[in-house]
Image 1 (cartoon, one colour):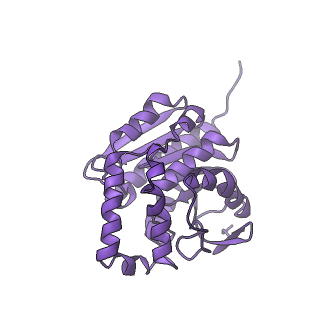
Image 2 (tube, one colour):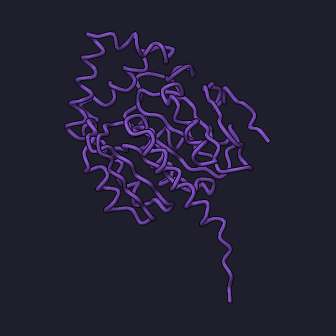
Image 3 (cartoon, one colour):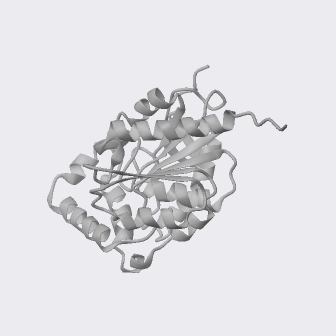
Length: 270
């Protein structure tokens, strides 16, 4: 059985570009990929195919509103946009794509959205979390790096480069930076969602992550009640799936396979 090759899902009248890889829901669990603050489907590059090959799972990936070729988002974004994406939009997408058993695999903003959803909603479909370079609160080092990126956008060809992937590169960029560099966003903190995570979690972060320190990972380690594996990758910045693709793919494959074995075990009562 092959997965119907979706290229759009609709959530409350908003059309979002999407792509599917590997076996469909019902035949295998699905890895749902949630992109970073300037990401989209195309910028996952070969990662979805590699995940299918290594895990045997299906992969569903979509671009949130305002990213890639999806419908535009209303700007300015609210300061709690990640919470709104998690609570209001993600479940609509999962329903529209008919997702069954799944693991949420998020990167950066996408990791935060995945964690907020898993810590806020009761959804038996979601069996595990993979959080790559998550952020739960602001840090000076991250805000400084975003400020540098904003200046780079102004003086370089970054906008032209982003336009290859996003329908409106300037709106995509402003939608992200205007929130993170808003003076009222400095106190943003959603780390309380960690206290409510009750599903197995894998956290992956580069040791050279320029947007976040180990404090983000330590927050998870100190607060989570669910089983949690933490992997700090050497020679890796903010994007483990791009900086260390083989290691990252193998870590996720091992995590997914352990979850599958647990679910397949038959408990015999003597």
